[in-house]
Image (cartoon, rainbow, N blue to C red; front, side, top):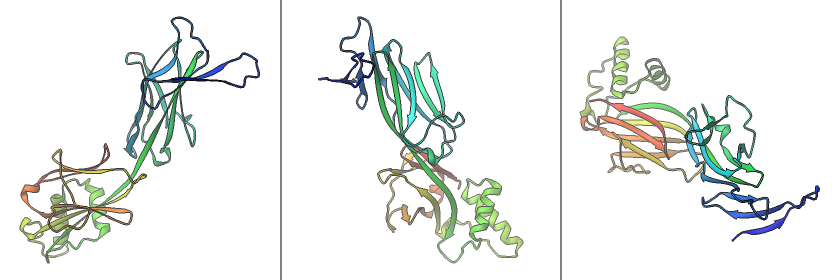
Length: 276
């Protein structure tokens, strides 16, 4: 059912405001006339933009497809701020797909907000709102050995090695640490042996902007279970300590070689490859 209500109109044109139901859930449609001329129609969405949870620095894209006759004009806005900066917001239209897009390259946390897409023509308007969550993330890689054969490199050394060599392979990093230690005349012959019960800790400074956001872990593209407590029986653990998340792979063995990744909702925020 639709409802009709008069709108205050100082021009005396008698314009009305009729709320119509869209076929797409979440779209608000208003018709400006009581009767539409033959062949004409108010705007509506046949594809609305979907909510995004995305890592900072990535490309965020909202896409909408609208209908109406005359062809509606599509505009974008946000609740807390504007979208006028062309370096942060790029409004585009693809005549082939009929997609209206707003692209946000190198998205940043201050852009997290509720956005609005509005389609208008002379017979009405259609509007939809959509949420953008931006994940703030900074990684610090740490590794520890469970027995007496522990790496003695401090946090600054780990950070410097990772930055200098763009480390993605943990065992390679250990090898580099060994080389540094040998230069200091320190014995490290057994430091990378798998039977030394190697435990790996990834410490992530991860700020989630909403408590309902889900975290998933994968090995070689397959989802792997993890415990959120320090579970001695589980191979993988993900524990929150204050504002940090610590992902642990216990007792690293040759069979544990592979590509590990951590996703927050649909956004990949971390990946690293272990090689035996």
